[in-house]
Structures are given as structure tokens and as C-alpha cells.
Image 1: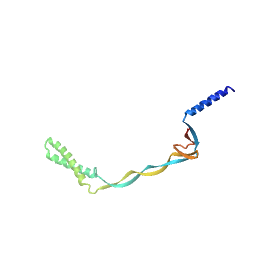
Image 2: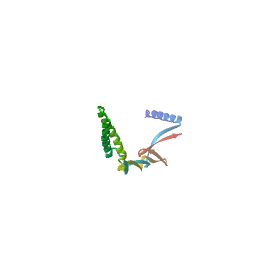
Image 3: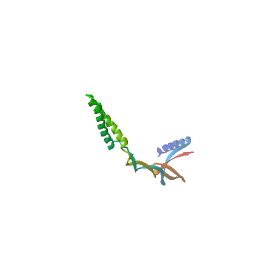
Image 4: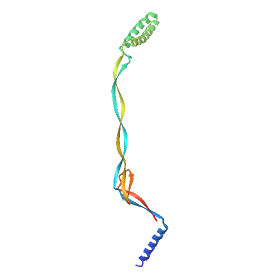
Length: 171
């Protein structure tokens, strides 16, 4: 017994001397959570949908049958006139040149004067339209606990079972 008494006395003296020189010390205590409530945020999401409708559009007269008829008639007439103008070896060149120029002129005349009534066709047009939907999402939790008669709350990303509290004792 005489061996344990001096070691206990030395420990107590060491503890009491450190307490005399210390002003404060801190410790962490864990308090049980009494309730965790979800914290909600409202977000808006765009919900795209497609809206389609029919539109009546005027069709251009390019490439119609009047263009072809005008080109054939103009080519034949130009070829005949070129044949009449040329003489000798130039007769063939004049005939071909007259046919080419007559074709171009006949095509232009056919497309300009041939289509008097405009032509229409139905065309489907579609566009994306966004409607907005709001919804609630959980963005964290508010955890409640009681510590020394006072209610405390801590926000966290998950529901907690315990809240760590740093307690500082001063003397």
C-alpha cells in the first residue's frame, strides 16, 4: 500500500497544479436529436413540348410545265430564225445559236406569263414551347435537440442522430 499512496498523491498534485494554472478547458459532448425536419426548396423546371400547326404558303412557279413549253417553242423558233439568217458554213452556227437563245428566251417568257394564278400548299410548322413546373425538393434537414434546458438546432445535409457540441469550462 505504501507504493500506491505516493503515486496517487503525485497524480493528485499534478492534476491540482495544472488546474491552478489553467483558466479553461473544452470538451465535445454529443446530444441526442429529438427531431429532424426536412428543409424544402422550391425549384422551377422547364418542360418542353412541341406545338405544331398547318400554314398555307404560296409556291413559286419555277420549273412548271409553262417553262418547258416556252423553252421548246422558243428553241424551235430560234433555230428556224437562225437558219434563215446564216449562210454557207455559218448556217449551222447560226441555227445552233438561234436555238440556244430561243430556248432561254422561251423559258423566261413561259415562266413570267404562264402562271397567272398563284399555287398554294399546306406546310406543317412546329416549334418548341416551354411550360414551367414548380416542385418542392429536400435540400437539407433541421435537427433539434435539448442541451441543459435549451433547445438547439443545427442544419445538415442528412438527418442526424446526435449533435456534437463543444463545451468550454472556465474557472
